[in-house]
Length: 166
Image 1 (tube, one colour):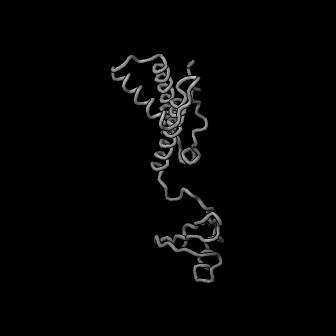
Image 2: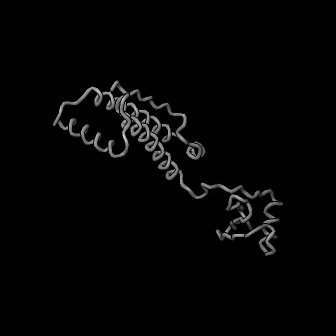
Image 3: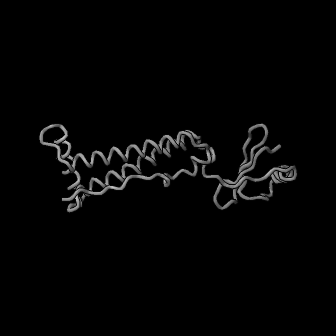
């Protein structure tokens, strides 16, 4: 006896049926012209439905939660990198310039040179972005499965970087 039926593609054509003994059968279409058609017809007649395709079928909540945390980290990092590329109102750094700027800032942070006010403002901004990421991660920890599936981080209000005068 079939206990579950579900489509296994976006096109909703091939499907998978699960029997009460755990056996799973794939059908390229329904009706398929096989003996499974009778079993599936009985399943449907008994009130069973063929579940729509679900891209997250078999994906654990833990995996979805980890994906949401990774998305939060990516979004926060994008805000930080955008700020680092515009350290002041007169400067927009390319990749090489960004690397050099980060090295100079790290050297100043290690005490080799004096930390600038711009360094301090950027550090404060980065702290505020990380605070928002932490809030997003806390929200993700409390989401149910559908909330995890729907999570895109778009509701988070990251601070706006206002570069200091150059």
